[in-house]
Each structure stands twice: as C-alpha cells, then as structure tokens.
Image (cartoon, rainbow, N blue to C red):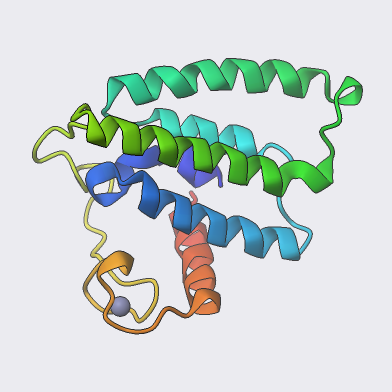
Amino acid sequence: MEFFAAKGLQRIRGESVIVAKKELVAVCKRLYAAGDLPEDTPLDIIKGLQKCSVKPFCDYFAHQLQDATKASLNLTSTSASKNDVMSEVNEILSEAVDLYHSLCTTKQWNIPKGHKLGAAVGSVTLSCLNCGGEHGLKDCPKPRNEDQIAKNMREFFENKRE
Ligand SMILES: [Zn+2]
C-alpha cells in the first residue's frame, strides 16, 4: 500500500481509476482477510489518488486527505475502528471512480501524451496479473482468477518496495 501512496495513479496506464480501483480492492481484500490490512490504508490510497495528472481530481483528493488526516487524529472519538478499514477503502475508491466518470464525461480527464508508464516505471515490462502475458489485466483474454490476481499484485508490490 505504501507503494501506491508513493507512485500513485500515474503508475497505471492512462491513469485509469477503474483499473486502480480493481487492483486496490483485490489487494486490500486479501490483506483484510488475513487480518493484515493497515489502519492507515485509506490515507495511503488517498495519497496515491492525488498523484494524478488531472488537476480537479488531485484537488478533490487533496481536500479528502486533509479531512481524513483530521479524522484519524481523533480516532477515539469517532466510530472508525479496524473493522471499518475495508469499507472506508471501498468508499474512497467508489468516490474516485464516480469522479473519474464525471470528469471523463465532461472531457476534463486529460492525460498528457507520452506520460503514461513513463520514467517512474522504468524498465519494468508489462505483464498481466491474471495470466502473466504481455498485456494489461484489463486486456486479458483469459477468465479472471481473482486469487491469482491478488497474489500477483501482492508480489508486485513487494518487489517494488525498496
Ligand atoms: Zn492475461
């Protein structure tokens, strides 16, 4: 998760929030099931969502981050508990996708050309999280295997971590 916070949306082809959401939900569910989902995951996700080339989107999540940071400072006085981390994650990502959709419809989702998979990713080659083929997950012709995707995703994150 720290990886997403550090590299953010710009890591994802076309900065597709939908792809990001799928990937993040898969990882979080996995960690959550293992009782291993850090409490500050929602903050990491918001930080990652801010790292986006589309300004209205960044601004929105910069604002969200302020609110979330405030909220996390007085955890004891709110209903937020460990059990809610997963639903918080879902909530944030659903908002992100809604915003993404509305920005797409109003043609405000403009990714600078040549930006996608740029320097940040370096020499890493694209490999499908489902089957390992040379395409993105969303282009995979094979049936989705959620367990496999979650596993590959976790390995991917772990390899990226310095
Ligand atoms: Zn594939």
